[in-house]
Length: 346
Ligand code: PEP
Ligand code: MN
Image (spheres, rainbow, N blue to C red):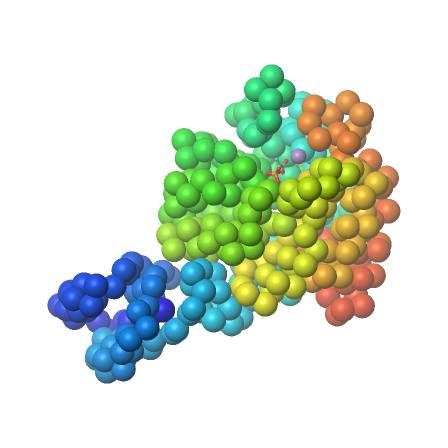
């Protein structure tokens, strides 16, 4: 349940309300979001008399939300979340492409991909500089050097940067170079990191944990939202199943389900969601058909020699061949890709 407070509320009225909630032994949190004051009551007892609350002069309205995720829910916000990243709209009917290599490897590699994306009017480049790897002996990323190269390439080709933040201690450093910070699958349940990301205003791409239920994924988003950061993109990247034919099983049903439950934009990552480049294109198209708001795709100038995720990285020519099909599918549903908006401007 959410108690939305009037903006005329006085400090005394706020104190009285807190005392009242304490008397009723309710578990609540008081939040100030976008100049809106609210109380989130986590579990509302069955015999709770909401009338006694609504009659208080400082309470604007009471919104009963039965889901454990409150601010991420459609009940709290009916209209789709939309925000701007350096002049590019995300969510609310917009469609965006994020593409690039799994990892930033060297200057030539990242500049080659940046030039390629620019040629196709793509607006977001991705690349990991701090990499979460299963083996401590595998390439761990170029770290700060990688961030600098990614930013340099992005600036040279007028692209926005998406890159992963692995730890609270790296938030300041990564946010200096990134336009969108990615929370990887392995960190979806790092609630301490999520809470810290709630306190900044940088957009967050929140990947689904590889064994996370949709409700757990939305609860992770709730951690960020409840800190005051409303710029969140959910990203479906496949889940673990019993079937080892695929690296991960891209959950296509997640797109209509998220649309039903939440106002947050949801992207698809068919690269990690399949683990194999030949399956990326069909699953990218299936995701668009299922209603995703954007795609994140790994593309590498030379996938055989990639330092991470080569088998799932598209060759540039494959990426090129995907674009017209996506545009056609979007047009059929009355939508446009962000890169086409750019094309019309040049
Ligand atoms: C990635 O985007 O390169 C990555 C490591 O993703 P995930 O967290 O989904 O495995
Ligand atoms: Mn990867």
